[in-house]
Image 1 (spheres, rainbow, N blue to C red):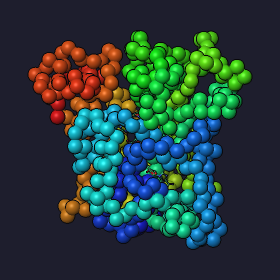
Image 2: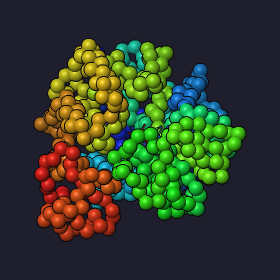
Image 3: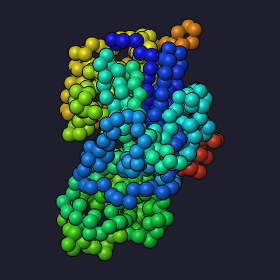
Image 4: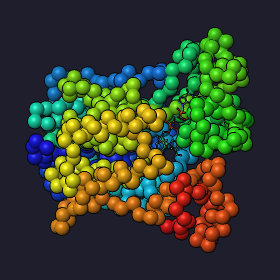
Length: 501
Ligand SMILES: Cc1cc2nc3c(=O)[nH]c(=O)nc-3n(C[C@H](O)[C@H](O)[C@H](O)COP(=O)(O)OP(=O)(O)OC[C@H]3O[C@@H](n4cnc5c(N)ncnc54)[C@H](O)[C@@H]3O)c2cc1C
Ligand SMILES: NC(=O)c1ccc[n+]([C@@H]2O[C@H](COP(=O)([O-])OP(=O)(O)OC[C@H]3O[C@@H](n4cnc5c(N)ncnc54)[C@H](OP(=O)(O)O)[C@@H]3O)[C@@H](O)[C@H]2O)c1
């Protein structure tokens, strides 16, 4: 690090921003910590917006730089100007019946456990994040309703942020700049929806307004009562929404699958019919033609729900001023990172929340490592620039060979602990006097929960027989399975059965 860091900005007050603020404050080193959040409350993804807002469906194949473009920053700041009114996709994809899909003991912050589990309704994580800010006394660091519109690197590795806050009494946007020694991006990556480019889809959307939607705007199964629905995708959103629709929509609910998911058995679940990917839409006739040659005529389907995920977006990143872009859209990954957290080119920049792995818990490891480095108190040094580049090239090569996504760190592949360990070791312990947070342990019961508790049955792994009869799971554990429908599965890497935490 070239200079002493005394001021740090954080973009976003979701779970990543909450972890960042807590870790930075605990160092008792920084004079200024500011957490900028464009919404009026912390919570990020977990805020439920009954009105999903966006009435327009994203253009098929359109990437974030076009769907969520940069704002033009006023030439002279500070300034108060007519509201920008730009679509920033800031409403969340949370639907009414959403519950978590990671066991509470493994998902929640290590020092602020969810009050119950294993899988909780969406308002529990939201409350937990909000409570985390007050419990860690970082609520005073929040600048709410404040959107970061531009991030520009200054000489000596400092950062200039251009900020915009809507003033509802004057009905204007106030614009101003603030400068910081370091910056943490905790802006999330499930805001800007993605719909793949399919032949004829753009014309179909235009011709039949409202017929095609994205899961981001799905709120309840009741709004599809009696309707014939085609769901695209079978990852978490596709699976959850398809299953919810079977209780309300016209049966069967059709589900178009690109590949097999962990929940798919040999046959579709009751009330669901599987279809392959869509080959083309015909706006003229209204037909939808699948890759196997089967088709739906205009009146066979009332609604198509694209559960095809989200894309990262950094509209505030000033690529020209910052010597290049931050995200590679053709390979779906950050440019120039080390451990998905640090940047080769920017020693005073960090990012939290990018890898697809355990969430809140991994944010803690990232946040504590970053806070420790910015405070100059890390236990293990980062490699030099060449070392970081080597890590990045090796990972990219391995991901290409194994056909996996750069930022995916699935537990089943055994890589997660090594990843956490790297961050854990960079951070090291707090001081004897109590400066800094201690990176959390990932103890036996937490690892057991990750490997064995599932929200949905997984064919080939459910232990309907042996596990539930085990004395360690008798009583409350066993009856919970029956009541709430969650299941105990066999771990991918057998490690012997243990008692529920
Ligand atoms: C439908 C759905 C269900 C999910 N279910 C689970 C689950 O069961 N278990 C689990 O572990 N994870 C789940 N996730 C993943 C979830 O996103 C993470 O748990 C976690 O909430 C991510 O936190 P984050 O802080 O990184 O991002 P976010 O929660 O997205 O927070 C980012 C924050 O940054 C703010 N922001 C963005 N840009 C700006 C800007 N320019 N200026 C100011 N503020 C800005 C946003 O408003 C937002 O508040 C789910 C995700 C989705 C979409
Ligand atoms: N708590 C919960 O229960 C819950 C509910 C919803 C979402 N989530 C979380 O939210 C995040 C986003 O999940 P998500 O399901 O919205 O997105 P996602 O995981 O990115 O999944 C996108 C899906 O779209 C499919 N797809 C892409 N192009 C397709 C095409 N042309 N035809 C058919 N399918 C296509 C993908 O298939 P391929 O993989 O084969 O390409 C994949 O199944 C995840 O972190 C998830 O865990 C959690």
